[in-house]
Length: 384
Image 1 (cartoon, helix red, strand yellow):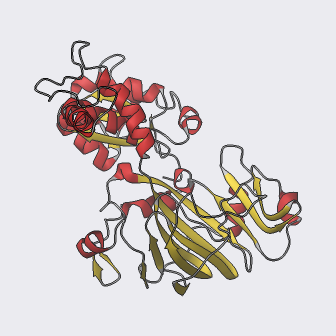
Image 2: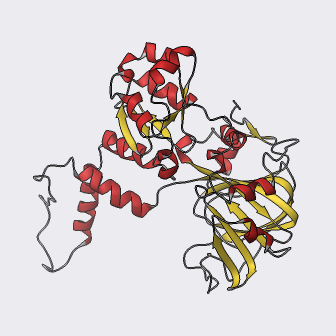
Image 3: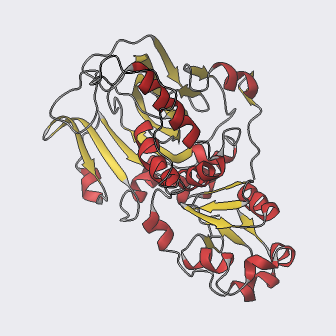
């Protein structure tokens, strides 16, 4: 298993987290020395033929107009009919299917696991790109094969004009502030909302390690409902000690400030918030992929004593919190021994020694049975 990076190039991780993470872009030359692409463009195209794999094609000059988006699964004929230049294939969550790609995630464990979204890989023909755009998430763009010319522009937002006639969020105006050509092993980090545009110089492959965070709208909507369930009906807005109303019809600043203060007090439920946050941040992105493996390891009681291990499904997510001791898996919270939960989320494995140490997880319809029945715990696939 790979170890988390201690440096990005010559930069200590502590410096990166302090000065760049979520703050400003940075190019790391030779971040992965002597890097060899773990997957070819042809293999990536083969994945895009599969029903269970999310894939897209972007053609700068498509049949329906500029920046045409096509969604998979594709056929071999689809690829044979493509032009020689100006198109890109994007395949999501390759880490769920190939162990070599999944191992790349280990290098980025200086950031919490629950922040990681997935590993997307793009193959671009010469001059291929997905246009000038921006994302709402942090991303490391690791060049795997060939060369890509990256241009980075200013921070933009929803008010920035977009190109019409395409479902893609292509920016109408793009002013480059920095420009680099990346070769295998080079890596570009971009925080959310920084505009960027990558154009292939000859055929090339780029690996995108993306990180996610819930939007303010999701936090306010979902968390409010979760917190509200623990509040008694008798807890209400109060205004004891307020001054006489000068204008009875006015919602005055003092009343608004009082409500804000009371909201802060109502939200002081750290255990409730931790339970909500852990569940939200481990919600599985592709539940159907996890479900494919339901009961794959139903005979685990026979197999584990023989040295077989259970592993976390590559499509699943896991985290834990200490107060109260909880294991979060695929958007659900499970009471679990703290030492077990911490060990499991670090290793993503369960062996017979874990069962012997923590027998309470092995009872009939207990934690292990529940996770096996939903496909979260499986036997290691051949490729993992």
